[in-house]
Image (cartoon, rainbow over all chains, first blue to last red; front, side, top):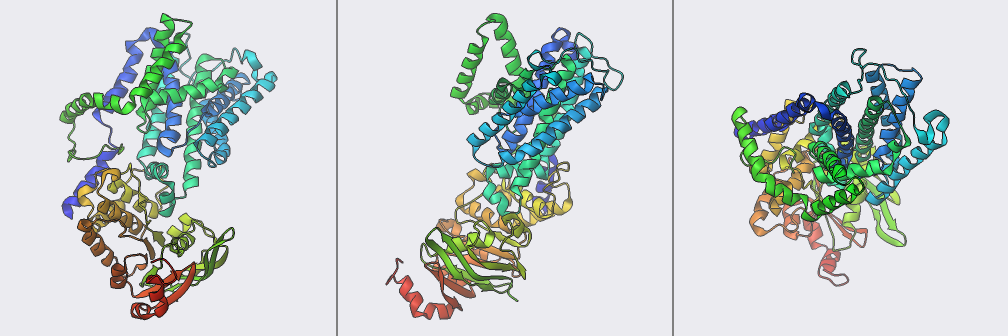
Length: 347
Length: 249
């Protein structure tokens, strides 16, 4: 009994600990500020895409809700932050960003009840429909949104009243990274909490989840709302750091790109969206410089190849590498009774 | 006062009557078995009790409270848990995570999104107790999907017990378990806490007669006999049903 108790509490304590690999990942992410000073624009876009993909991973990877409509929240918050800055309602970007996220979360809460119904296909269509409607509304009310020309010349005040967004994108990039990290940190707390565990149970078997007393629909509404808020923050970041917002924020491409990012990076371990976003953005950048007209062809080909090979096989190939990295990490950090233990996320 | 009672429970699917006038009365701490041939409506009754199906007529009373219109997850919180005839487990979770989930949920931590699982010592000690009781300690880090069938069956029951039910509904707990693992399972069922009321649904007559102190026989959606095991065993109508004179065995 006693060794079992020790093992259980050691495991539960270890489960959510930051691994050396994760710490190294984030150290590298922040080191890019000094490592690649000429690449701020694409790195900033990557950070925004990563946050946006993280929002989809929360519902797809943890709750099993597939969506083609994350752009609805991205776009709403994008226009929201543009409008509050233009009309001088909220001049401080951090507060404006939080409000934009809350506005997107409110929309997520309202539309979540549509998503509860139906199968995956229904969900794809319903979520897509919501973002199309919002895009059309933005187009219709062009006196407010600028219509097809977009909102131009939005003047965004300095973040926290101190850091002005410069034309080189230096402060903008740091701002995006800090926001990405904070959101990631919150998401990580969520997935390792009892609430996060209950989401995985709902995804795995909602019949049994309700048979052990879990209010399934309420949990799905909650995570959908949180996810919408994260997507909104990503949209707000884009508007604030580019001082521009156009109908493109609601486009189907934007939502579809997210699924591609998660196919590349994988779902259900939080880093999939981040890694996928980096690969996707740099692949896109590289291909676009090789063949400016036909880069989408090559992106498509890469995706087909990934799906045909299957991510499991890629994981097998890299298993040895990852094992040796975690052994290396193990020397710096003692991990009791790691042998035979399942991966923390149980994949 | 009975802990679980049904009054004139009826369920129709269109023109088909799956259950009619099912009146059960189960005393606290009882070991009650519900038996009957295939298609008699046993699973329908379980689904009505747990709220998966809504009854066409009749009512269900748990601990003196009418729960006929209460949502399934709330019935669990009011003290009724079930196991499934076909395993309904979380295949991607380990037994440790599965039990941790149920315990956290019951302690009302399920909507807590900031604290870690097991952040409270009460959760940890209860997880340990259940893993130990159900002999799942040695496989607690394995993914549920790869556990031997007998262990999965144990986890199926452990998960229901982790909800700390007053009434536990066991739907054919021994179904499909190979002989080698059967004894362990039966021993675990025999050792279930005495204060937990158990309603057992089972085909295996050895298990029924060794376990139950009261038996109800369901035939064609209706209650045929309800009584002590020896009375039920002697009843000519039950013999007729089980010897296949007018129904399949």
